[in-house]
Image (cartoon, rainbow over all chains, first blue to last red; front, side, top):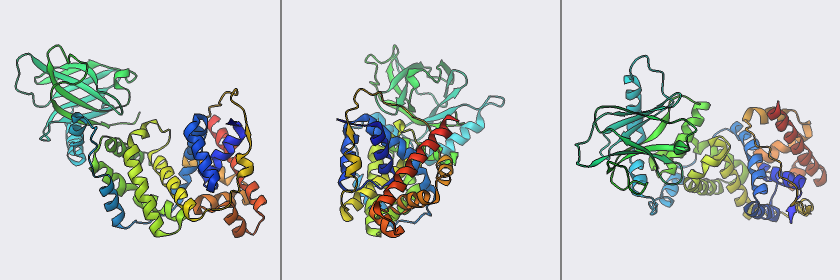
Length: 226
Length: 186
């Protein structure tokens, strides 16, 4: 059995408005869980109606609320792979100061990049700056190279919002820039949230995923809105 | 406004990576707005504190889902808080099942193609559309949204028969829908 479109819309609207209560609300929630068209309708109505809440004057909650939240989210996510944890070390304050510094030191005359990521080593030292320039230039600028290691090189990874890292190939371990041609629509950069560099054999990771240690990583900071 | 949204979006992205400092900043940036939203619905501070706490734990766990949402970050978070608050009052202010008639309106429509009306709407257009409703419809819908009144609470507050109030809500929402679609297509 499915809801008629009119009934679905009417229920989704009352759900989003908040007048669908009691058993009817519970029943609608179970329909949302089992029927995509129902959950889509509810999401559409929520997106449409909820911005009205911007009118409500803020009320400061007591500090015990945050303490309770902190306690509930305290255990580290055990399934998080080490490179995600490496990313989490990038502290916002340090990164934004560095970002401002990097933008300031971009050679004059260069158009602003679309986004920048400052890749930092675990000791928070900036090592590489990745920036995206119209129409398809991804520039990988070395800040401080690593001591060369026989037969090993640096591989650049895109960290998507969900899923496995995607390789963008090897980058030069030396001062200067590596330029990679990537467009915004390239599947490798879809939903990218961060970049990371790992130590890999010169020919690239044999498995298609990072195998060596993550040397540096950094989240993407948009510079201008698309 | 746009800067705020971009900032919240990046805080959510970092929270999805397990960045607690970013999540703490997200809380500081939004908790007073969201607490007020919950307080309107649940009406008692201890319940609003519970709703806020549950919602933020949920936001932390679901932060990686945000990418798929088609709404602004604050809208996405507000919807989580409103839903949690409504679930909490359901427990404390259960009312008779007044929506049976509507819920019972089940037909087999599995053959009908789902019509997608996916589009971005913003606060501006919903505000405008609300202004376009009849005074009765606007008042009823605003009371329901901002104060979390149920159909029967609306009826007793407005001193109108339950059926009349439900009609105002339903027709008001239908008009809002037409208005929002018009704006989107325009």
